[in-house]
Length: 403
Image (cartoon, rainbow, N blue to C red; front, top):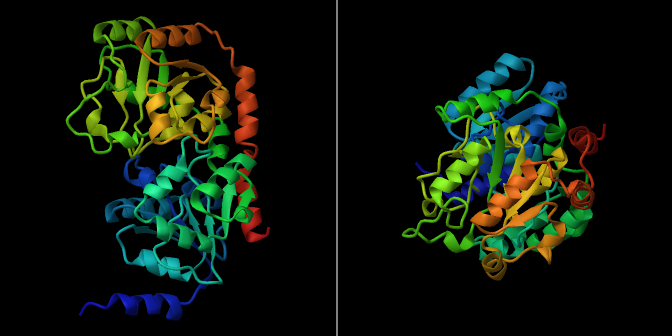
């Protein structure tokens, strides 16, 4: 017999007790489903980074850890990993489709998520903490909020949030107004992803991974391309455009990349309608669709420069102090339809801007030749947009658990 929904709500709300020391971690679904982020491949998601910090530093005694995964098969893989490397930790991996998610939500003393989600109402004696998933929104998130079909629920549920971890005063101001979260709930500590971006590591295996898809194409430099999603392309299915947005002379483009030993790795935004992007990519361009071994952070580290547009990956990339170039091929249209958090947006762009094929060649060649006129501005923008960026995991743990 199927249990009525109202009976379940009563059970979760009034009969399922909160367990002291129980911590629920809910990663961003875009990272887990599309980018294959997990407790193993964890460096792109703030929630997963924080739970790994607790595991690696043995900060789990007297705590029960529950982590939401994707499929039952993936959850079992992650559970086996934890059993092998953290055998004395009380940690359970549950698939997102499991009924155990709501039970864990209703019984956890601490609820951590990478974005604001609300499967069921929070109890007064639970703490709900949003660790976030991007540093600072460059595009207008208020547009996203009012277009969201769940907007009313989101604004009501925002009252349940206890803390949102912030990287700067600007971040707090933008997010507070965009999602109607009380400004006083923002805590200036930073995002856990800063810790792993700043951590030194050997990422040569990433180059080796991509070389297997390139055949005899040789490259010594990687340009990471991270375009954001286009709202105006969500319902488009009969028109194709190049991966860079503007028209290119394919042979000339391929020759330029080969002569300069460049490999462009494109990582489309999870919300981008990929059907509008021409799948016949020029030689020297790969479309990254996720990997079990690594993710966005490793891509940033292995790259020689970042090519982006209006996405907040730019702010994270500033931590590496490497060149950034901006593809503003649809700037006027994007500004008209969605808009930006900063006007003019160019004020915070610490890098050259191009809009078509000719300016692309000019900007890329100058940057590869070592013409870096934006080193000082990168630091200036980083200090403004990501004021809090060091020892984030440690400070997060001490703040939450009063240690």
